[in-house]
Length: 217
Ligand code: G3P
Image 1 (cartoon, rainbow, N blue to C red):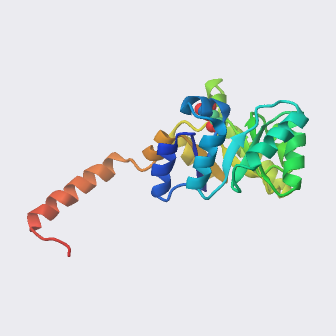
Image 2: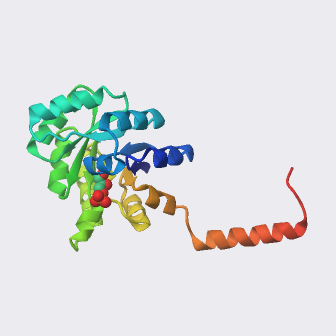
């Protein structure tokens, strides 16, 4: 499973990338707003840090305007992945952008039938929003499972990118189902390493080691 980090915070991206944990980055207009940076400037900086795909989202809602924005965003770096919303204009843009070899992430997916359309439009990634479905009192993970089945039935190559991930359990469930990628906020990504028994076990090993009076090397 690939890990993308869902943020436009360059400091977090740099730190997580140094750990060797990052396969890509996803941003969206809300994350750009949160970072308080110019979209082109911050996206360029992110693309220079991470080798994998960096999703940058168009904000136009009409096909021609989307294509213009996609062209501008594509020029930022070779590893840009254009993010488009799951609308008919977005799907049309997805088809056009992927036709010339560029990557597209189709975002704001809340139904398996939407994911089917995105695959037919040649999407590189489909982003089902688990957490926001959970917020409505429905199990968001069910959607990942449905999309996995549909894509496998027809051998679609579109990668399932579990988005709106909020918890460590979301990551685990998405991995069990077979999502190709999880885009995870920095704090949740860091929480993946934590287990109280790991900390307790390490403390005990270090205490016993100190009693030996030895040093390695
Ligand atoms: O990148 C989109 C997505 O991950 C949004 O997450 O927490 O705002 O629903 P959230």
